[in-house]
Amino acid sequence: MVPPSSPIPLVSDDDPAGVDFESPTAPSPVVRAANVTKIYTRGSDPGRLGTLLGRPDAPRVRALENASITISTGEIVGLAGPSGSGKSTLLHLLAGLELPTKGTVTFQETDLETLSTRERTRLRLEHVGIVFQRFHLVESLSARANVALPLVELGVGKRDRRKRATALLERVGLGDRVGHRPGELSGGEQQRVAIARALVTDPTLVIADEPTGELDTETGQRILNEFERIADDRAVVLASHDRPTLAISDRIVRLKDGMIRSDGNK
Ligand code: ADP
Ligand code: MG
Image (cartoon, rainbow, N blue to C red; front, side, top):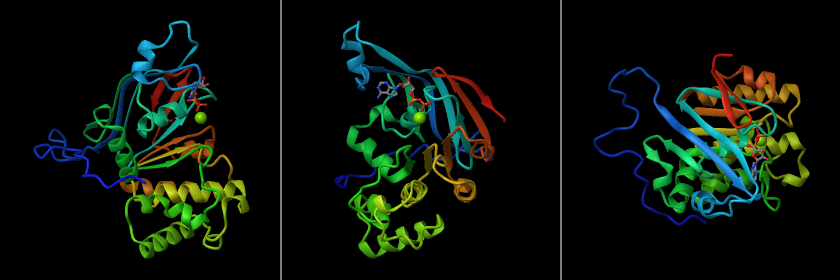
């Protein structure tokens, strides 16, 4: 679906990734949002230009206001806050699914705004694993084919795809459900398929929107253990209302009315 393109230059030659000259032991930032504001107009996403040109009397929602956050390798950041506080909006910006109305999002060394839509899609495909609040599984495909889908887009061969998708499904406890379609799975099982799909490309950044919302306590705990394991050499951001989920975070960022109210220890 995404045509092959040249690799996106995430770093220039004279500025190698992950090297922090001031402090060699500091974790390297994976993604950074700086003073991001997101305004939605009339239920659609008008983008930056649309916001400038949009009718001034059109209803607007300021979903996020002047928010700044940095997420580094090896870190799990929990995003907390009541419904409507801007958690999903912030996750979408960090994932490069949408661009902010104001402010910048930098993935490793790349300002996402400088990329074309196609380059942004490619960067997401290669480096970001996303677990959506509503899963977004393809109904006509088996669990294994759903998990393997990003690998199809990356041009990975069929045997490898099957192997990796099966291994991921086993890791989330669905080794005996690989042939089931989403409609034949419970909500919790669909959620685990979505988690397996987010991990199959071995992403640098994992973003999960209420990833344990549909799970019973025991399965939820298993998935949380999995997130802890994958965060060893990746950056993870989890939006959640759920105490046990927030408890595995190294840091909790609290949102209210689109603004970051605190960013620090629990
Ligand atoms: P949360 O995930 O914390 O529940 P959201 O980021 O989904 O919050 O939403 C923040 C605010 O932005 C809410 O008031 C919501 O109604 C609004 N919003 C989110 N997405 C859109 C959109 N596509 N169009 C218009 N308003 C939106
Ligand atoms: Mg949400």
